[in-house]
Amino acid sequence: MKEFEIICPLTREPRLKEIEAKAGGGQWVLKKRSIDARKEPVWRYQYASYAPGEAIETYTLPASCDVHDAPAVIVIGAGPAGLFAALKLLALGRKPIILERGKDVHARKADMAKLSREGIVHPDSNYCYGEGGAGAFSDGKLYTRSTKRGDIREVLHQLVAFGASRDILIDAHPHIGSDKLPGIVGRIREHIVAHGGEYHFNARVTDIRSADANGLLTVRTADGQSFRAAKVILATGHSARDIYELLNAQGGVLEAKGFAMGVRVEHPQEKINWGQYHGHWKPGVPAAEYSFVEQVDGRGVFSFCMCPGGILVPSATEAGTVVLNGMSNSGRSGAFANAGAVVQIEPEDIPGTGPFKLMDFQRQVERAMFDFCEQARADKANPQHPVAAPAQRMEDFCLGKCSKKMPPTSYFPGVISAPLHELLPPLIADRLRKAFPRIKLRGFYTNAALLLAVESRTSSPIRIPRNPDTWEYLSMPGLYPCGEGAGYAGGIVSSALDGINAATACCR
Image (cartoon, rainbow, N blue to C red):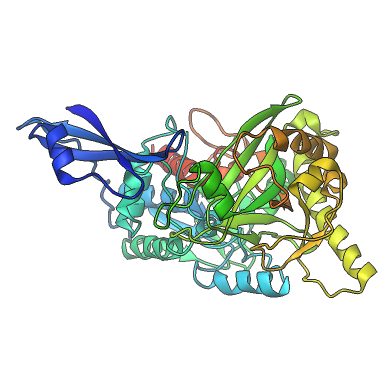
């Protein structure tokens, strides 16, 4: 096998004659596609060519078994970690019994719409809770650096098998889109059920008990049901605060874990296109992305969950809080670009002791954002939306000035002018104010950019420690914590890989 590259303008793909000439008459396979925008933007296509008779590298997914009568494994949570754990269990001949606190991926849309339109937070069905987890409605970005966690091909090929574009197998920054992910998630469920697995929606877990004399753990749900199995996979996501409280109440060990918090930054997409493509963007060319990392006063300040052509959505899981997230559809054709701009926070940055101090800090900031907007509504006798977000223009934020007039925004509930430079905790606000003017992205530092607070659900502020050899929870043998909620992943692919590894561990 040999590799070769073809470089093309953004307006076209490689021509067949070009590829065949480079391949030297042998068979060829496209391995990777990326945009290089360091100078004049171009496509870079990377290929592998094979001599006659040389075997072409292929990947085959593991087959799913019929598990109607197989030993059961309870899977708590139907986000990426839970779903991919369940698919792996099918391949290993175990019956997944999935308990999801929320609704199925299509039914939960009505509750998300109610949150956006009326500000009513359903405690078990929202942008974070429900089938597909938080990732189902946040663009479906699949880029990860977690190459040592496992074979990423298993995740990507499974997604393609259930309806994702094959482009995700070759794109340097693959994504699916919030418009397509629900269908894929639904088809994964249908596959699991067809092979003998079970799904239980509206099944919020309220109790997990250690193994009895027969070696079976017991899981109870809010609707009074009990489920028993020798193995339980805990894949509840980064926002399931009640699970941490449940484990703590039973004397289980937990650890405070660093996470990141900041704002969502929203620009007109045309400004990002202009800056990233050096004025060469044309209709039909993908909406430009960006990323940045800065070190400020000993902590990282970085972009998170960048959504080209996307919209901002309310992601609170509790009443009386304001939380922002971003999403975009597969075409990424919206008028705005948004991304988290967040500051790394470590346990030593927050006073106090105990595993909950970062989670309590997270909740306090989310409530402070809501309380400011609530007071603003009362002072002005203005019936603003219940989950309107406090916001400030970027340059005004850095200069410590309140913004008198707000630019347009994709955030449906709307914004309220706020002194975010004072409202955000100093360890966040001060670093962001220093970082923004430094960021070397053309057109990024501008008063046309709007900052909305708060972006706080970047990852879990708590870790559920597990045995590094068996992957079992240190405080409960037979319980396998995994994914973002356990503090071992960040994003769809790393969570899926962690779920696959947890399923493999519990079947040893």
